[in-house]
Every structure is written in structure tokens, then in C-alpha cells.
Length: 296
Image (tube, helix red, strand yellow):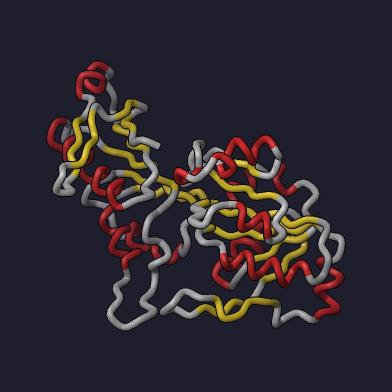
């Protein structure tokens, strides 16, 4: 998705040989249509996109300092870097949130942030924050829960939001236990240590399962979790992630037992996926009813 201002794309955005970016605002179009707010919409799926955004807001402040700016990004970068796990790291999530607050934008709209506690930086600023939660998304698109018998949270980090949805829609719920090496990112183990095999069999056998999380990136967590779920012979397994990064493609999920994937347009774009071959294109999976994109 290319950055737009009130629905108008930039006149120019390019990179110099030295690596620096430059942008040119569509001032003629913006000046022709009087507005009381600049609404900037983009997908921040690279560092270049972040720099582009900062250059845009800087230029808007130069030409129209009197007009407030609203940012709609939905996927919030650095959200997973919300704690210091290893010596020498910083809390990059808080830093990025502060960057978006008072300094540049009067209002910001995001969706299903990884850790809601990191949003307190906005509470101490004049920036108005709109947070579309996972519960909001399911309320607006409740048909995706049709026929689902069990919701599974892949770890304790997503437990509260997924269990809340299960409670609202009277669906059974399970939370998995996950142990990850913070240095390598490798998953040491994942399973249902707090639930007996007899109870798992009752909850999973011949049931339609949906695994829910905020972000799907390499998706190793889901692949390993599905291995545990398949031991109890479910009828089907659906994966829902709000922010579908899918850095290793989609096929790894289908090959390992997931029947359907649901995500939003916060990160995933309707075009051939990351330059990969045609079989990874969104349209390929839509045609097979195995992939659904929810518009936020």
C-alpha cells in the first residue's frame, strides 16, 4: 500500500543512491480541496516506510502547520519489542510509540496492538489514540466464527483477548503453554501442560478449531501448535491473525494441517506475496476458499 494523504498518493517518493529517501507532496491537489484534517494512511512494513512517513509529516507541517494530522497505520511497528529480554537491548516499542505521539500527530489509529500496556505512552500526550481491538474486529466480522467450536490462544500473551472473545460468543477456549529461547527465537516447547489428555480429547476431537493471535510472522508457533492439536483429530483448523506478515509464505501453514487462514489488510496486501511465485498470491487462495482478508 502506497502512502496517501486524504486518499491522494504522494507526487513523488524515491531513494537517492546513498540510501536517503525524499518525497514530494501533492500540494496542488491538497490545496484545491480544503480540509480541516490531513488523514495519512499507510502500511509501515519496512524502515523505509517509517522514514517516508516522517518526511511526509515534516513537509505537511512546513506547508500547513495549522492543519492537524491523523495517522492510520493499524499495524504498529516495534510492538513485539515491548520488553528487554537480553542484556544490551532497549524497549523499542515505547520509543516508537513516543515518536508517534505529541511530536507529530494529533490522532493515531491502530489495531490489535501486541501488548496494550505499551500504549500508556499515549496517555501522557495530547495525541488521541483509537485502538481497534481484536474483540472489535470479531464483533464487526462475527460471521468468521460461524461453526467454530473452540478458540485456542497459542500462548499466555494472547490469552486475555482470545478468552474474552470466546466468552462473548459462547465458544469453548484453550490456552497453550509456550517456551521460547529469547536469544535465538527458537520455540523450545509448546503444548497444553495445564490440561489433561482426556479433557483435550473432549474439547478437540471432531471439532472446528480456530487458533487466534495478533501477529503471524514466521508462524513457527502455529506449526508446532497444530502438531499438538492434530493428535486429537479435529474436524478442521482455522488460523486467525490480525497482522499477517507471513515472512515464510503461506504454504508452510497449509502443508502442516491448517485448513483456512484469516487475516486483515493491516499488513498483507492484495498482490503477489513478497514477490514470491504465483502460487503464493492472495487471489490463488481466495479462489480455493482457503484465505480470507478482512478490511479494517
